[in-house]
Image (cartoon, rainbow, N blue to C red; front, side):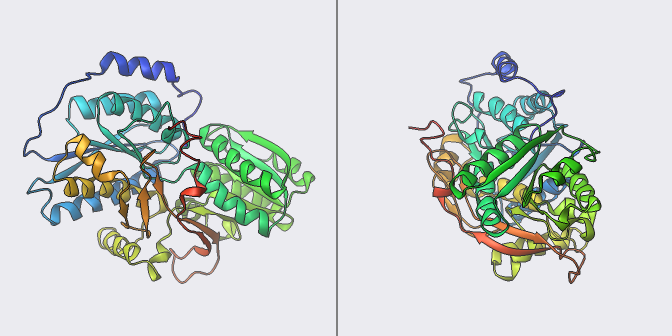
Length: 407
């Protein structure tokens, strides 16, 4: 995800700000103090619902670590900050977390541009950052560094998996409606990459601004093109509103609606009628607990702490991002940056969704992609998706390290 053009900060501005305030070469002494994890996420703004669930899940990882005795008795603490979905704000908050609060690690973000700003600050200070939002760019040079880790899926992986499924099941004539920022752009690029090999025909590639509330001028045009598939490459309230309006317009009668990421929070907010039959991808759905013990373990802890509710997809990433770092610190017996990096590189783990692995060359988490379809008449208010396919973890489905600029 990304932020609005109004809030956008150029790469040059971010680099300049980081250079002025960076303190390279300074080693912070490791003491028996609390292990602090900075957690900048957009608590206010259009992605606030998802961000708050990231916090709730991250707190579960902290509680687990502390209940198990921490690291030689050192307990962990989550330092939550509101980045307001703004790269400049995120950079400022991250600088404060590192320089003022002495955070040992940084986890978070829910925007492509925001995570790049956070990563720039962290890498200049030699602090490990584990991003929990989708981006192709963060795993590639020049943004990547040895302290950069990416727990979330990438748009190339996500769109590739969904595209392979959708283009083989629903047809080849496609209209893209994308939010006009990095999330939409990278997702559509991923669909087009896989679609080229499958012979799709792109009838139109339409864009809308982040925070759009009225799609009525676009829907008649889309309908007149008679696509087999409408790909909605947007997120949060944008996704919720566009799907509801497309449903009310009657577009589903002739066209299959597909989203690269089909959000649990949006589906809950909009209801079953609006989302019925919509297909998309997901990093996590609580219903896999029937076959995945680590998912059930997370769900049970979340239920106990949240009045019986279940974690969302992006919420679960908050858990995974924090747990990966704390588990690595335990294996390393230290929070020293180089030792934790060594414990993370190539690490194989199963913290909440089945097997994963941090690819050594770019620190990208190799993981499965779920293909889900929204349904009606579930057994509970939380039973909203059917898992109709799973693309297993496979590094070959990611951009290659060579393509990302790694030697």
